[in-house]
Length: 175
Image (cartoon, rainbow, N blue to C red):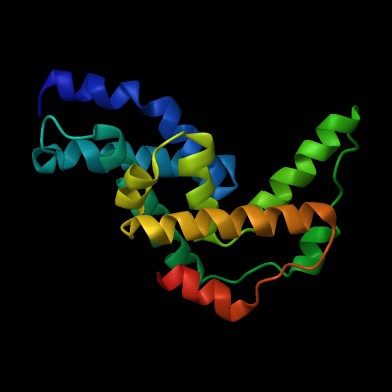
């Protein structure tokens, strides 16, 4: 491992933090994911091929760490949605703040693969090819995920019932 590699990883911290926060929906989990990503990247720096896309490599590590964490969480006791909904939420001072919070909640409610697709394409501005490489799927699958995510998000924001059913979510997660 060279000092140059460490510096290169540090340059991507902000993007990793943003990606992790939107993917995880929790600042605490996002910080843990970024820390785990940097640790894994430094430990396995010999596996990185110089001259290739370091950002994509780091985001793939982060994505894999996120899904590993989600698999671990399945074994833990979950708080019921009704209980979580009953927790007090501070009132927004401005209307746009409340609207953004609502959009963020709807975004966080998207299935993980759709949320990831929107993050990679819409937030980070990656091409479909780059996003598909990070998500380990075909370019057409990435386009489909982004389209479904946009439709689902729009439907939720407008207050209508989502058009997909549980089987669609399972199919998109397996793709």
